Image 1: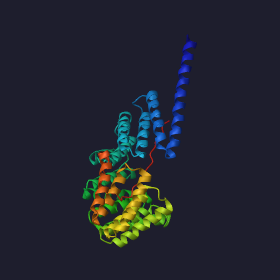
Image 2: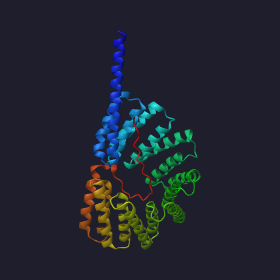
Image 3: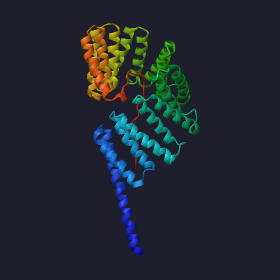
Image 4: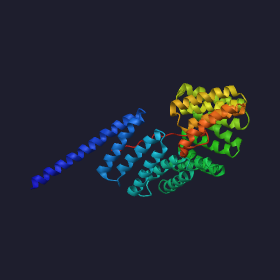
Amino acid sequence: MEKLFLSLAIIFLSLGNLVAQNIDSLYKVGVKYYNSGDYKSALPVFKEVAELKRQQVGETHRDYAVALYNVGTIYKEMGDNKNCLEYYLLATETYRLVLGEKDYTYALSLNNTGAVYNDLGDNENALKFYKKAAEIQKEIIGESHPDYATSLSNIGYTYSLQGRYKESLEYFIRANEIFKSSAGENSPTYALSLNNLGSAYEYVGDYQQATECYMQAYRIIASIGGENNPDLAFSYNNIGSLLAKMGEYNEALNYYTKALDLQEKTIGNDNQQYAISLSNIGFAYSNMDDYENALKYFNRSLETTKAVLGEDNTSYAVTLNNIGSVYSKSGDYNKALEYYLQAKEIIEKDKWQVRSRLCNYAQQYRRTLQVSR
């Protein structure tokens, strides 16, 4: 009888090892698809990994939370924020149950979920999640840690989306001081923080302070990577935006063009940052009543956005709306209506994703696929 129990134990152990090996193999396949940008192929693989993890360890295990989070991340890369939110919420709740509410990973998950709420235009829930993350981080890593500063920046950014610019500025000032002391005055992190702070000053109408922040950020970035550092494009666009608000459209156009030229040389013309720079130039020409050039650059932006994100994306709708505005300003109301209606049709397909703004914030995008083994 003892030999029989021993044999059964060995069989179950072997089966467990096979399941673990299968999950590991599937995970590696998914990562390969993910790293190559083939998110449609990666999605079913990571969903299968999540289901196998659920069967292997149950629904209240850290590994299952990681697997859920990875599925959400694939959805986010595909631009499907509603499904991303569903999986991020499940992962966040699982982290809370497994790790407790005073855990760093739980705080990180709260921050990531807050970002998705912002992408969906639900700023109130974004603030709720960001503030909870900041509260946890303040207690477990302290107020001088850069991750706490990141949470403060997230809160400031969300307030700016709500038009609460004074509150936004307060949080960006606090975050900037922490980044200055923790990362150093010559770090790219501090330069990014200065760009965010400059935007906050710009929104409250303090253009002098905004200029100082943008120029200081520019000097830091240039000193790190030289004049061909692609991050300089953020500074050029921010300075251009500020000049445009001050009515200096020719100077704004000069900086927008610098950003576009730099992006062409460094990151190419097949990305959304390039499309944003094209739109910025279109705005500058429109403000100068040069409608021919405005339409030229907005149409180039439209084609780039179409190639990168597709025609059902709200960024595509925003650009259609911008083209409609140019036609309206030039007096061609029939043509303007044609573009406005196209934009309206796209927006109404998914009202959750309506974002009636073009953000020129310098942002860091982290590819946050977690390891699930």
